[in-house]
Image 1 (cartoon, rainbow, N blue to C red):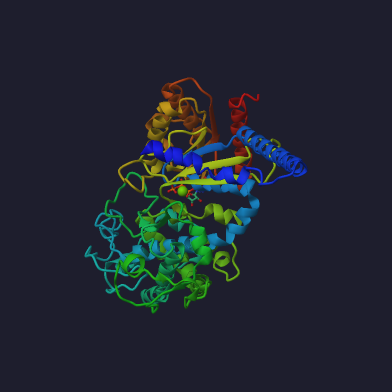
Image 2 (image 1 turned 135 degrees about the horizontal axis):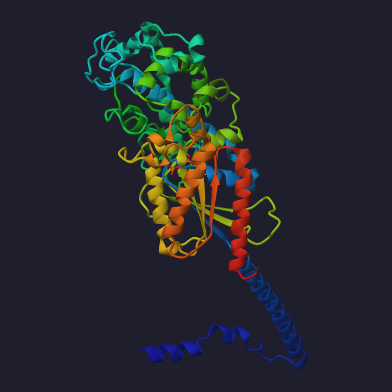
Length: 543
Ligand SMILES: Nc1nc2c(ncn2[C@@H]2O[C@H](COP(=O)(O)OP(=O)(O)OP(=O)(O)O)[C@@H](O)[C@H]2O)c(=O)[nH]1
Ligand SMILES: [Mg+2]
């Protein structure tokens, strides 16, 4: 069968009929035809040569592949944004407006944390009625649990949380009392507090609206509410599970596109006062209705603007500050904290600045690759095409093993904090373990590692506020408790691990960074870029 079909194929060659000379061709016609064919062949060969040259050029222009690693909240996506800001400034500027929705979500999260603290009874050991300081002089406290709505709306307005709030009036705390803040702040009257909480109910609707806007329809799993962050260490109160969920995106779903396109229709848009914990995030999630939605695209900003005075009053309230302090909730240290910028960020004409975009928090889950060609000339043409891979931080080490360069981010300010995903693990300890695993990875044996000892600004603020590193890192001993000494100490420790665990001797670059700071980070990123390009040139044997 096979033989007969191949013989048949020879006779049926479609080229035969097309290429054979036309019947009755004269010698002159034949000469003209051959000349035309020769010309066509020359053109075809020129095109082939062009393609070959272009291929060779592309081969020469190596693609820079850079991997960002580090635990969740270490600053990987922020570092990526810094690259974008520096080397694709036009795209970065154009996308700034899309971050407004993320910043709105960040504000809503902060407000939710405060309201949850107000609505939620504390654990017995944290309550003022049982804390040693207050045992003799506060109101009695019932730890009975109640159902509360996400944004206020307590069904038992006079239950224990309000009492705890009131109890704060009778307590004095040296840390909060001495602050300048106390001169201006005062305690809200309980009735006013309840009224304020009610006025903030529309925020619940707005949060659901924004989540729907962020995620296209039918992709419910793409954006979820994850755990809380920035718990103090050691975890003194296991019941401190205030609802501080966080929105996160999976890569490749184009959340920016979704934000740019979506108008949202919320079927039951009245703000109910029912106490349903799950209503805003999952079951009550509004559905996107493309551009036919009822809401204006600016509705979240309008609502935030209308609630601005109330949010400011809530945040300035002395009772709230004391309650948060007792619960060890350091809101200012949470990523995406904008409550001190409310006047500006809730104005109707607000457009995020570069700094706002870097400060905003949007958790990444999974592995996302950002491809770009540097808009800004680097002085060398080679290595203009970059692929930066941002591995959504988790403690799992499922990162892609083959990369030319790796930046590892260790947020050294986390020495007194625990991980969001495992509250029994200290953040610094986790970073050290990840670094050790990275250094000893044989697949990355020939890759030079870059270490960013990140969040140095937060570290400095902590040290200046009197938090002693030696309390958490015993080996630190009685060295000076200042940024310079502490960062040198950390650098030495990380360098020693690198030396000990690297399969082969290799170079090691360490920088103390605050990647939200544009001025200092620009220089560091330029050095990293040059270093990465140099390495590629070396690998291409061009140097
Ligand atoms: N103050 C300060 N904030 C920082 C610094 N680096 C990052 N942040 C903030 O910390 C938060 C977390 O940073 P991300 O870049 O989202 O962290 P990530 O490593 O990508 O985290 P995942 O997406 O969970 O893996 C953001 O709100 C940043 O603005 C820093 O050096 N200083
Ligand atoms: Mg990220």
